[in-house]
Length: 185
Image (cartoon, rainbow, N blue to C red; front, side):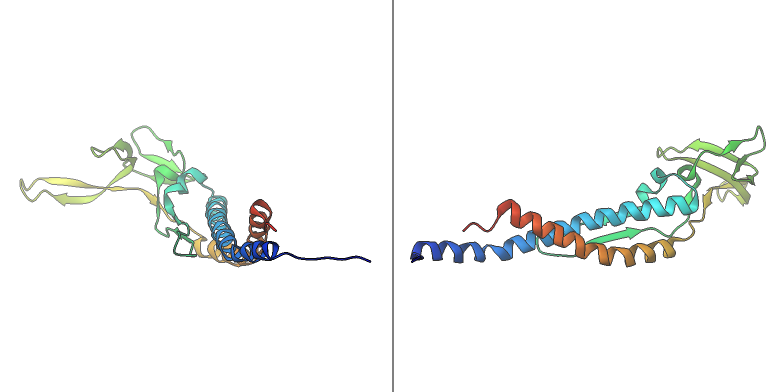
């Protein structure tokens, strides 16, 4: 004959451990969102750099990441669509007294300079502009930029993949949270 008994103290401990479970689920969900948001940002930068044939380092400033905070479960990855300054796209070849060449495109009257603000870049002189004070002609200067292509395609592909991946990541994080803290009986 086998006899089993459960004391009141044991049942109270079991009830307390299950009351801690929602907090573990919230922590696991937040950690999964944070890690997946970081992964999406890295994957987006990697894919954009590969498709546009530019270094990943140049795209570092083109994205913003907002990871979930304590009161929200929303993770945001923002990627800029605007043209990329040539200084971030790679090293152009300089032609003596005749500008620069980048990927087979010749930019006459282009030069490399650091502005007073400290911004370093490649610039070109365009058109004529008259100085309103002295009336003397003055050349207008603009920074050379190259277009970023395939941005919406990359974002769409990463978005599709991340939905499935987030579910797996949440299962992993919940498993970690339950095994780390455990449901102490």
